[in-house]
Image 1: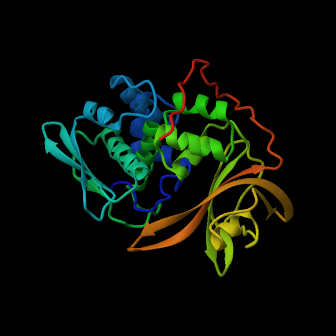
Image 2 (image 1 turned 180 degrees about the vertical axis):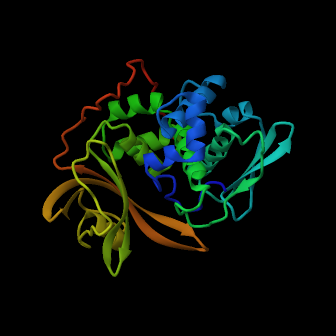
Length: 317
């Protein structure tokens, strides 16, 4: 299986850390790297792959990284799947990418396929992997593999030792997300998830769908310091900042009042409307970054410490 066709799987977190680490592939990663959990293990392998390819700045040259992993060619194709990893024999591979996808989506898919090559055991028994459009469920043993490949894709596109200092310098706001997307050639949802993962701010990445004329929270992914528990029964007003993106495709406010745990709280909202693809149809969703309002600026990142060396400068497309 390869990167999912949903435009928001780049930001999704379908299973918890404990489940991911306890999986067979998670245990194999820990044994290989000595990391304490599967996520840190795949990040370590990605960093090693970047070092092998002598990659030290963004945007990441994914073709060069792939070539160091035995990928002889990356081909754009007219196909239903988002991507395929095809063994050619003798430790060589070819990656096929759906031509119609936006470049940021294609980048993520390439990173996902490279992720398969980094996982223990794949090279010893390589098989062709592709997207089947099966729904992700925890009962599917391949879920841990696919989630880890998504983590690898994000880490390849936005290495934390480069992304963290850039995010810290720019701050947590809408213009920063846009600048980071341009600099790292990454998609909006994947970039916002990476911002949450830095743990520099009290923030949460959320995805909303319109149900019965009311915006409903589909899922959320919060930083360690985010002080609220967001549940899937959370709704937003149709005339609020999130709701306006459904009705008018643009919002006139960056502030949203939501009822959480029976109390009203105000959040700063950085949101964008996008199309979600799948099954030959598309539906609108809103991806939003929430911060307690008024934003308190940078939040201490605890054990996270970013290097002080300059990370480079942003370049406009």
